[in-house]
Picture (cartoon, rainbow, N blue to C red):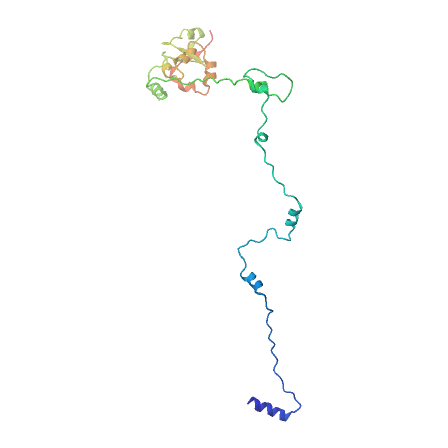
Length: 227
């Protein structure tokens, strides 16, 4: 059918040119060498890249400066110098300041520190603890030894200074400390130091935080008055 139409067109217009189909030109990529293909496809993919890069500024700077090798110090160089002979042979409490140099150790550091005085509690007899004393105060016994609150002069206070009859004054108040002697945590001997006199100063220096008005309220005899 196509050939018939082509012949018919030629007979109608013999000057017309028969259109020709466009030519298809096939091109193929240039052939590569087997070595290049093998290197690209079958190369060592696990090899890390060069770091820094070959043409980087970091590599150019590192190559221009020589590498600095750290110096290893010997034991003699690492150890500090020995102290002067005067400091090595010094004795506590003896001054070694033979010159006015300010680099010497102060003489105060050569003195031995004072030993603290230990004032511990004594072992109390069974049934003489703080709770036992609180129960004794609540028992209703007459711990003051007098019927009423009285005025006590220093001469009267001085008469009560024995183990069986001990009075003491604290901040102007006179207490009968006889029943409290076996309950005293510091021992009876320490508490008898203020028997028959004013013990305010010694009490403040020993345990000023103790509320003596609460502890000896049932032992209050009276108030200290002048002669």
